[in-house]
Amino acid sequence: MNNAFKLAAAAAALGLVAAPAFATDSRINALSGGAVELTPSMGFNEKSITIDDTANIYQMPQFLPTYKNSVDSDATNGPLYGTMNIRYALSDDAVLLIFGKRSPWQPVVNVKSIGGKTPYTASGFGQTSVDPTNHLLGLGFGIKAGESLRLGAHLSLAGNKAEGDGSSQDNNMLIDFGAGIGFDLNETNSLDFGIGLRTGSFAKTAESKIVYESQGLFGFDLVGRGKFQVHQIARIVPYLSVKYDGRAVQEGQPFVPQGKTPKFGRTVNLAFSAGTDLAIQPVDGVLIQPGLGFGVVQSNVNGNNDNVSNWDQEISARQFLHYGFAAEAKAFDWMVLRLGARQTVLQDNFGPTNKSHGGRSTLMEVEKHTSDVINTVTTGMGFKLMGWQLDLNLNPNYYNNGLFAATGNATSGWGVDWALYYAW
Image (cartoon, rainbow, N blue to C red; front, side, top):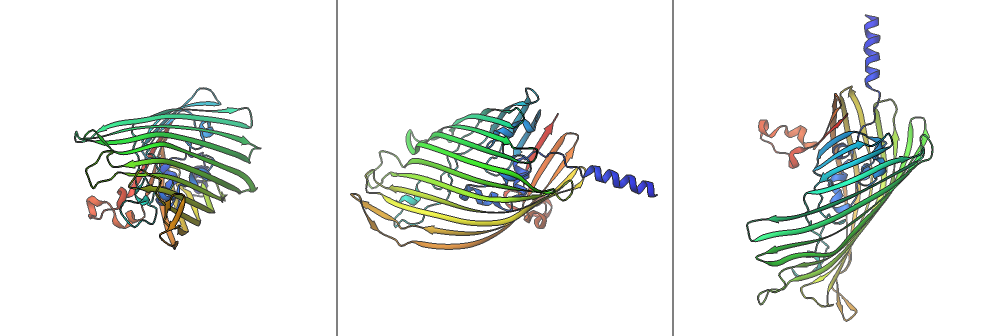
């Protein structure tokens, strides 16, 4: 009996040995404590940078050699949704990436600017419009160059000409490039940096007339992180991120009936976030990652219902402080449980709406301030069997509502997003 108990304990201990886990989007979302819900308007999800030993391969492609000869399909509803990646080892140190995904042009600050006394003001331009692109295909490459240097890059192209009811169609194009470099300072400490560049053009026509057009689109993001061992079971993971995008927008037909006027505008969005996580691994198979961070996002929108310099200008800024934790534990050799919790203190500062008259501005509205405290929880689980890995990110409400087919209680967003990964 005693020998049987020792054998079972040994098997359980072996089951807790933590093999490297690929950071699928669904796995990250389950550990993010609500960052996914904030991402469209905040432009960040720091766990995609700090979690475990890997980072998002689109932000930092130098991590590609970490996982060789593998494929994954990721059906998340996050910023990188509907992806498929194939990684093929060209050598022990070099990996080729072939991928496809849906990737809309997502503004950094995807909310309306506040202000505007009439329907034809800057608050309508670009901020609520996501320019769609489908059928994005790309190639990436990552290599470990020597003992301490890692390099990676990717390039993707996307476009679609989507026919609607015969009277409407979209003509969209997107170019996305990313590159990264990493330095292994020693066996436990490292520095990594990434840069992304995006450009494109989008037009929607109806009855052979343009009703929406974006021109001069340009965006970039810079990201960096460090990993430093501070204790036998703990390391700190500081990070920073800077994002920018801008566009010129025209909404409405260029030639319209009397009394109707097209809208013209320009948007510039900027986001900055920085913080640190403390990654603690008390035993193999368990990861606890508390963290805190601070960020600022700003949107500057100019627009009006005429194509002259007499435009409204609206400025909105959002400041946020967040703190929380991620926890991941191997319940069985084939099952991992995940939890994320976060509290975000969000302050919105909406600048005055100015009307420009020959270089002079007339104040139309005083500045407004609002503040909110947002508490969020995410949950998920992972399953591993014979080289397969299934990650589930579950809306916590799903546990109360259950399966819609059985209970009739619907959970928004299906209640689940998932990723399937296989390595050979």
